[in-house]
Image (cartoon, rainbow, N blue to C red; front, side):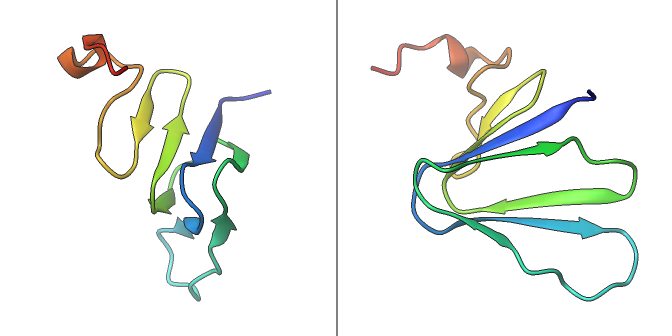
Length: 84
């Protein structure tokens, strides 16, 4: 199994949109409610994933909060702070 992305909604109505670099009709977004998790294969060349709303995105190397851009599991100084 290859790399996967895990997207966890932190609010109702977070959406995930899958696009390609080619000219094609806009696909319908996948809508997630708070607490829902979407597990998908990592995108191939030319594919993009857009996340709207408050969600956490986990990759094998990083974790990112989509609303604030805070790196949760990476190497930034912010990840070293106590967020309690």
